[in-house]
Amino acid sequence: MQTLKKGNIFIVSAASGTGKTTLVSRLLAKHPDIRVSVSHTTRAPREGETDGIHYHFVDRESFEQLIRDDAFLEHADVFGNYYGTSFAGIESLRAQGFDVILEIDVQGAEQVRRALPEACSIFILPPSFEILAGRLKGRGTDSADVIQRRLNEAAKEIAQAAHFDYVVVNEDLDTAEADLSAIVRAGRLKQAAQRQFVEKLLENS
Ligand code: ADP
Ligand code: 5GP
Image (cartoon, rainbow, N blue to C red; front, side, top):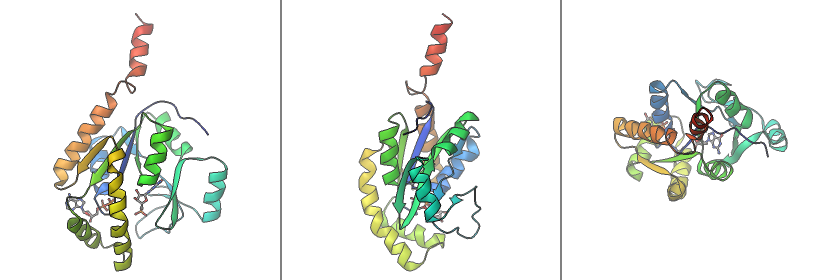
């Protein structure tokens, strides 16, 4: 297993359609010092998605080779496709001085929590299942049977909320965004995240 330097990693998970992508893009617009890690996936690009920006789109064979090469911090099968976070992607963002958000599913979140216990994990909830269904339909990116599959999975994913450090309810977008910003601020002030500063201070004492 490869290792990563210490720094701020924020895991953001939610059942599909909750509003995770919407909230994270709002957060990024306010915090130029945070970037989202670009995952690898075997799913086909959706309209408007660009390789290398939204995902690294690869075939199953290449993905399985990357697994064998120990290239992933975490990877999971989500709705029949592979998704994974590469060490290289995170390291290149860290090297440029960015804090990193991992927008990943609950299986990936569990793997990252185990590998990097200092990572700050956030679960986003919809206000209700009715509203979640409405958001999935309103987004207009999935067929009726895919939406039904996502709703069936949602309850299982939401049951994992108990394992996360923070839980945000995305009812009003502005409130949820402010909650997320507050968590980022708190995460950066955790003792582990401030350790380098303390060490430097003591070196010069
Ligand atoms: P996810 O990334 O969690 O799958 P999206 O960010 O794509 O979800 O959001 C799903 C849909 O819900 C989008 O059409 C988005 O505009 C809408 N949405 C997100 N958050 C809210 C909110 N707080 N109130 C109303 N609609 C929202
Ligand atoms: P979508 O296909 O809608 O972009 O994403 C489907 C699900 O896969 C979402 O819950 C998303 O967060 C998750 N996902 C995206 N990238 C990764 C990843 O690198 N690892 C894991 N475990 N899940 C991911």
